[in-house]
Length: 515
Image 1 (spheres, rainbow, N blue to C red):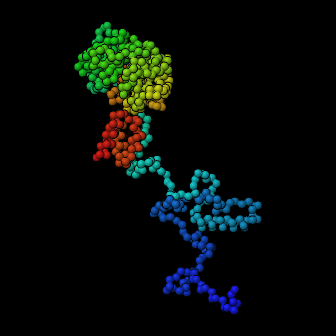
Image 2: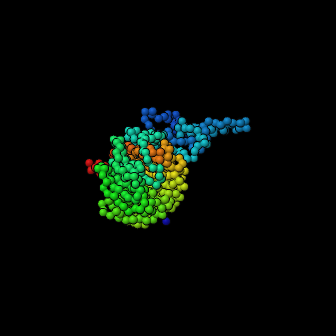
Image 3: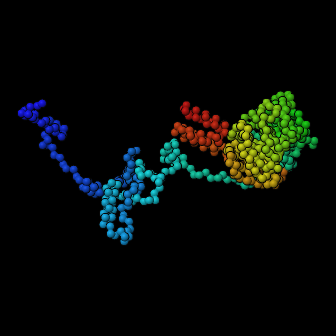
């Protein structure tokens, strides 16, 4: 216990409230009184709130911009007092005071130009804006980040629908052109020479010079049933009515050889490099190598009636055949029996066309009792689509420049239709022939088609666009994408391009990067 007589110890010295330097004394410090809340609100109200007209005010990622924020979404009542009825007069003083206080608080916190709250706002709107929003064009959302000058240069109007001439730009007389659905008497070579079988003769028309020359005359005992140019365009195969096949050198106007093997007329021909496939009324297909001494190297059997359509795929791996037995068969290079059989058509299948844009895509058309164009995927062995044309389908051919195809028809409308694939919307319907449009060929540049009919005329139509316009567009996109180090634009249009154009693109890209 402590001694009560002992005086208590002195209290500790008071610690200064401020941390001062040794040379300073508390008496030298003057503390100014802070303003009250009322004076602070008055000062906020009296301070001008305006933005400089010379520059655009934008906030950063975290501090919202007051001028562009939507404060009307707050739950504050309007600064303008609502209309009051007589029942509210008795407590009008308190209501007016509350409204005045709310208005002062709004202006102090949010600024004098804050809009009043409305109840018609969209719930998807945000209260705060972190930058001033303006109307932006679609190009501002593009992933390449265009600059303004590049955007203006790249922007173009909406592509207008392609115009088609409703009449043929050239008409040639073709006397003795047979009106027979099962024959193939017109073909266009890669050297821009058109071959036409008229009766027992074959004529050549040079599209560059418009000169007509007579290639051969088979005599009175034979007639021409089919003509077909080789892929190089220097040899012409002629199928005759007595089952023989003649090979002619068109540049020398000389017959190279005659091959036998069929018992009846040869109405369909298809080339695959040096291999020539011939289809006959005897229901068989013969493969002939024009370099070999034998008349044929293999024989394909499967059709139960005349073979009236033959087409090799663009990669020369698959052969499609159509017959008067309403069957469509697909063969490979080494098979003697069909590997795929399609039996959906209800009439003769003469119109056959392979797509140059998609591997394994095959189109076929049926005769008068069918009138349908069907699409097949031979890779997956599936039926893709069926279009009823309401008219006999005589021929089909794909465009090499765009993903479109053209069909010619017989009974009962004798029309020519241009289709957009895969939507199969009609781009144009052309008329001019008075008989069935039984014959069709396409020019080597892929722009012009020629049609033949039993009215003994050949009509030329400008159908498809030029590949040059697409190549120019490609060059523009390539240079632009290389400058930006992006290839998004290029990849978007590659499915529409041909293989040789894609290879050219690859060479240009490699050269640009190496340079």
